[in-house]
Image 1 (tube, rainbow, N blue to C red):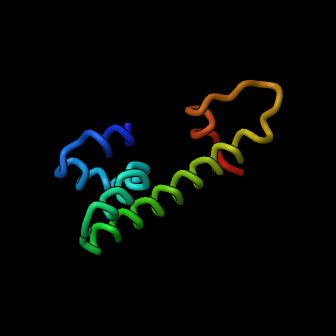
Image 2 (spheres, rainbow, N blue to C red):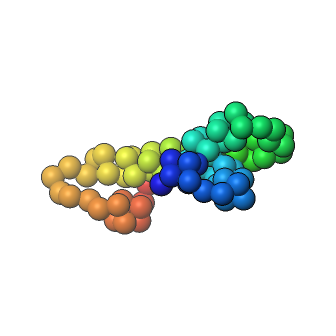
Image 3 (cartoon, one colour):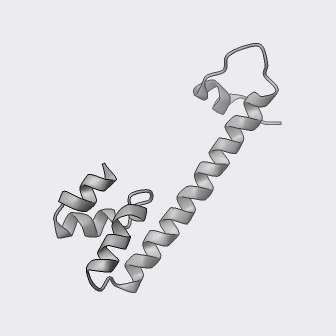
Length: 86
């Protein structure tokens, strides 16, 4: 989906999605190559991507830590997120 947005979308759509995490890593370099992009948009894209990465790593860490010691039974994501952490 990010690839198709970067290739087929209009300029206004590209401008908006180029600042959203995950999509920005595919669309923003293309916008930079096409012409000038305001510095604040690059800052928003980088900050959003870094923030999303930190939050996703923390979420993955929480799920991993809460399910690591629970061997012998299957634990779903919903249950892993509600189990008290160690």
